[in-house]
Length: 357
Ligand code: NAI
Ligand code: MG
Image 1 (spheres, rainbow, N blue to C red):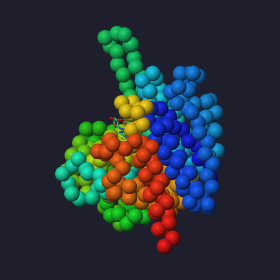
Image 2: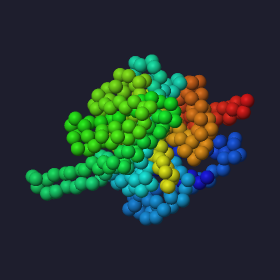
Image 3: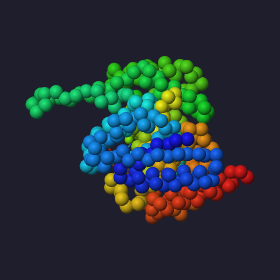
Image 4: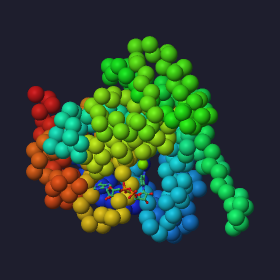
């Protein structure tokens, strides 16, 4: 198996180092896991040196890998829309990674900031290739009183049906009974009414599943008031982006949440990355939580055919958190990024030995 690694900026390389140590540990434990990694330093420093976020043939290079493990990108010296639109967006769009899969799950030893005592366990299926993040539009009459800006939302029948089918297939596979759709068709009357119609049409092929459709403003309130009710949430690009940071927050913070940018047809490699960004406010201090990155590696392993190793890594993370001794600052402890990574590797060894018993 060949994995392309892009550590990125800020805390990206710090948390990536720990994920790669976990991968090494797995390879020592399980001789059937043969992974070759190649690291690409396509980041803001590369941009400052070359004027590009990745080489001209960057996508062709990445296409040769089975999967991509991504850290985070973003640096004050480069405009954020450049880092996003010249690196992350081309990968997501060109590789048709139309599913952005974001689990939201309570973890042992981590207190939710919410008063709820019920465990939270749902997944967000965010449309990842079109919608509000289309980059179609422009400005007119620059520098005059008439200056204006237009940004178009692009919703296609195929794009909506694809993300809804993926959410429904997942719901059936994991024996869930409801799929919740995030909409705003009362105010956004063209694209969101279209979204509602295609959601309904697609879900009519899944009579076992119940559709719950909520306006986004109400839905964010329900995420806070009764998050335990949700099973599978399907949302457009922008709504899904916002919902998933909220999802991270209600289970205990951005340092914990992984994501997968998935090309379900497997024509192209899929890309796995934490939900969080490059966290410039804590970068360089060795205190970032590496769990989101390590869990992203786990999702990658599950995707490339090793669900057993995915489970093992998640089990090790849960064990470390449950024991409650090693925790980074964001979740109320004093451990460094490296200490957290080492604790997870230690737990992995224990979990691996127990597995055979
Ligand atoms: P952010 O996710 O980087 O940080 C938000 C807050 O969460 C900060 O207080 C940060 O310290 C904290 N945080 C994030 N990850 C953490 C971790 N692993 N451990 C402990 N604390 C953590 O979002 P922000 O500040 O809005 O953006 C910073 C930069 O990241 C910007 O340049 C933005 O464009 C970029 N970004 C990149 C993304 C990507 O690479 N896919 C996604 C989101 C933002
Ligand atoms: Mg985001």
